[in-house]
Length: 261
Image (tube, rainbow, N blue to C red; front, side):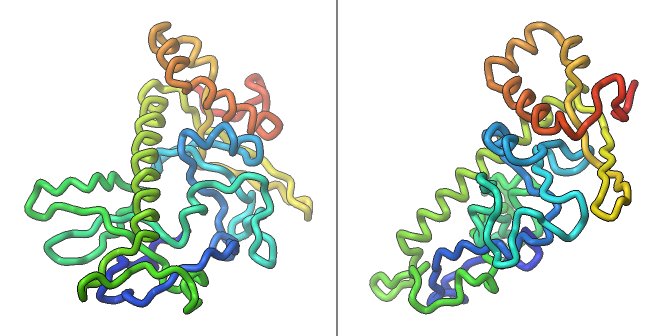
């Protein structure tokens, strides 16, 4: 989901905008991967390989294609071709981003790549704003659900929009929690870079890099109390689902191309 073209949703510019649920995912047809919340890893791992980016985004990701520019789970008619639909796509065409209160400018930070905490304590405090892809087909109809309504001559968010924002805020909270979990894995040193060699239809061998996987041998060396804590918070089940999702793709440890100390 390309957030570069998203814009703040405001009553001034979108007072007549209406939303219609459209189950088309053409906007995702070029996505090679998408981020997952921690709570999604177990259900998503039954349908996609789940790995961790080596740098940057602190969240597990589902691999959607082994070649750039071709999401194999989006059909030509835009329908989704997997039994599980990541929450990342379920919230489209809405998102949350930082809005600098003094300027009204929407920053590039989003819940996918920054800590949008909504802290309003500073002079240039950032507030969480609802962002939309105004070009999305969900906004193309005049007979959908209004996002704003009139109240005593004032244009205010409709009940539908308030519900959407609440769901986005819940996603944001879950995303920040997911980042903390991934940071625990990174700080513990149990994520190791890996490489995946995929044979394409034309016989070409394609090397997939830039991701990490959990090394269970390193987890075995961790402090027993830390491992017990990971079991308690459900992290070990997440790790198990992640490893199962790539078991047929990543070589066994003695054959692995994962980086060694």
